[in-house]
Length: 549
Image (cartoon, rainbow, N blue to C red):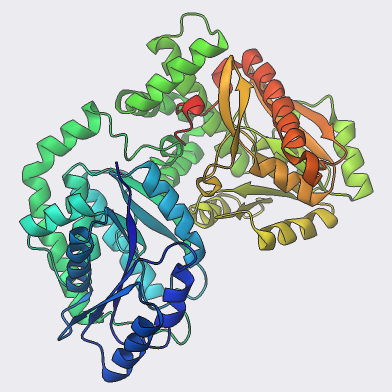
């Protein structure tokens, strides 16, 4: 389809920040719609100056303040009439990071029918009352859509497919104020619009102006949830049917299988583990895995396809269930590791001398791991030698996960370093850790959301698969020894493989692609070798070869 995107900015009295917001968008396009929601004279003067300075800016004024929803609906109608297919909504108050705009555009271009939502990554500036309120709203959105995991329902950083959004606007009376973001999301999901997410940094500037009225807007959001809950009740049969028996291509991602649980579920499982022990927990894994097996059609299909590629005997549904059960038991082992169980007596580690040398020299290293086996045991083997481990993760759930694990074991020493993208600041922080003799661990067999196409096709299990360049570029920036790490279960024991990969990875400009491709090919060869050794222990439950992650 023809893809034409504009920027849509609703504004009410944000005269200080609007020019900077507009100018930051011109790096990515010059079709900007500003909808003035009845701002004061000072803001109107600034907007007139912007319109005079930038002829491509379309300024729309509402004579009186009606609310954010009203401004957005007016802007969407105008943009659709002008021939645009998509509108990227961004707030005028400077909370959103314009540097993430290319990721929103790329994901929307790849999925033109989808609603692309920002998933906020907050810093310390977020007001706690607002944060807790958002969590309550997200809970109700999950109830109203009958989804385990829903896109962020209140983030004002989104790309709307205008045709489907405007059809809904014309057919349903949507709220005009702050509850608009929530209600249009729920109703578009009800309509079958797929959703995608982009992790994005959100800040609350000290001088920022918020127009969220605690009484009026909370009452409006509560009333919206009441309406939506009632609407869910008579839609429930169709929602349940589409959830369990249809493929929802728009809402499935590589991370869903691991993220379909929740903090409360993990906490309950920890309590069960402590009360009844590891054997009872492993028995409980059977019905839990059976549930995910029966409801996870895409995961089942990906599992069977992978097992067929790796040469597993009779790679059908029975083998797929064993594959998922292996994942469930691996989670049990991770849980035990997080709770402080000593695995030392059950670990065979023929390369332990190499780790001892790292500890003795106090020179850090990069370990490139994978989703094969149990990488959590790296903490056990490294801690024994007194080496700190920092695991680079891509999910915005890392702070919450860290808190849960800390409650299990206050002495837990694995540090999760959450990143939304690997930029200069991240590289500098990790480099300092390496210089202190610490380990940086990053997986090489999964493409993070921020890669936006930074992959190379590498031969893996008989076909080209998209491997991420990021882990190997990061390793080159560290300028330190690089190892491959695999930990595979063998009955009741574990075997750790620590393979020296390079003294350091060098990527000179003229040979950058060739060197990078060679590193990634060598990694894929070793991963394939170990996958064939332990085929049921590779836990990527999506179509790795089609780059749907």
